[in-house]
Length: 304
Image 1 (cartoon, rainbow, N blue to C red):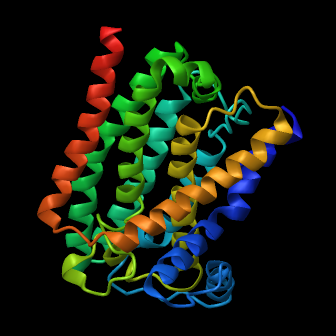
Image 2 (image 1 turned 45 degrees about the horizontal axis):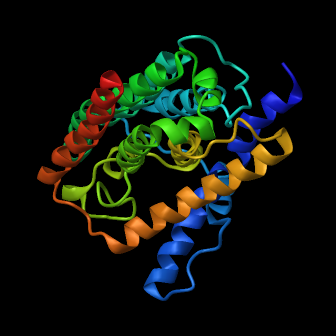
Image 3 (image 1 turned 90 degrees about the vertical axis):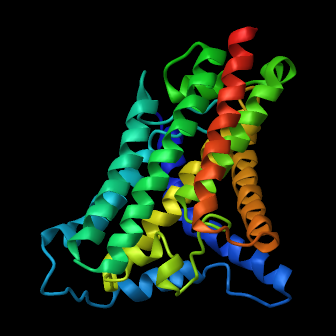
């Protein structure tokens, strides 16, 4: 394992908060405002790490360890992500299953901590998170099944390395369908508009933000940082599907990947600027539609 392989997750750990800065700046441009600095989340993280944490007397150790568990899961997820033809440092056959389980464990820890507070609002958010997460997982696995059948590999690094310009010429429609399905998952899993509004303060309409109302100080910093890493994970999956980088040299793959990640952040900002937040009853329909895209891609692949 070379230093280049470990540079991949290291770049994610350093640059992930910048994605949220890009999203906020794009939204500010659409609204005609100057907006926050690109590095605002870095400032917020350093400020929160210098503060202390306050816990309710009605909570248990579950609330205290959940942010660390969630953040650790996101760290491990970044070690499984390839950059086109550059293999992930923790790559192995079947790592796609581990990736899904790590994402599920992070969600489980957050939901369990929200229930541990005994708050009706946080329990409501936890219920919504569990429901939408259950609806989002089929789209993820079906899309991954399409890529497994397309590449004939079981490891995430080998799957993405097999997506070349030739693959786009023969099966470009399948890749576009999977990428669109996963982009909807990106918006859902990261609580972005139109699924959720990360900046809202209306408890009756909140999903993710209502679950972390009891956190402060370093714990809240872990939550924010873990959320940025999760955004990077899903953006990296979309980029690996859409951008064929395996045939490029290493010095070309790295900047292209980073530019594509920034482009995904810009796209998220555009989507949040032109769309309104959906009613909660409409969200399951969007997630079912996302899974339907992967099903269509799977049917087309099986009929080849």
